[in-house]
Length: 333
Image (cartoon, rainbow, N blue to C red; front, side, top):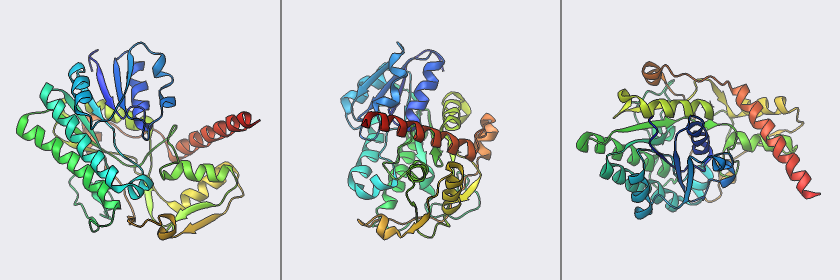
């Protein structure tokens, strides 16, 4: 990237704030647009002390604000979205409309001013496809539309389609990055994110609640590795018009994850299985058994591979949670 200004939507969020820190560390100028519905200004404490940083509170659905900021910037990283299983299931209409309309507004503005942009997508677009390793052209296998869980997958696939069509029909330089369970410091447990939730339960000596039978598997990628991938995709011309999986390949079941966390914390907590109906009483939830990325495409383009292990991720998350608990106890005195 040149020293031109970069717009990061959703930059006060978990992934966005780490990306902002990385860009500023290289002397780049960054503007963040975030409505703080799930992001936090505290994530940008370090960025706020940098003269190359500017924060604008607002929504990606606000056409006037988006138009002004995209016009001022050289490139756009569109991360803003309603995320987290709990939020998506409990507020499906707001989540769906925010994700679809917000992306439409940002992509239209990028086209208006011919700005290169990266659109953040998700492994959820693959739905229930149980393949050993999901390639970027793998089939999407979804449940019925009335199951609200799939509204997120559908919304993000619409985002991708908009990015592809604007590239193909109008020449807009777009790139799609599909994130597979990005985790690490600053990730909140508030919206159903599994690792921070289980870590905090273990530290408090509470039962670790694992949904379903616990045999469903996921692969976890450290946010620093995700940020490296995003930055590489933003500057490599070979990425334009394509989608790329961004994730780690180590697969672990949720019950194994919970036990690993108990062992690393040294907790006496027990693992308790909770039915999906009990965890999500509003309904609208359906899970997928596994989700494993094939990252050969991004490795071939950028030479990118994850560098952080699951143990690294858990150690950082445990330390962060312990520090937060110490601060909470001091504040309570």
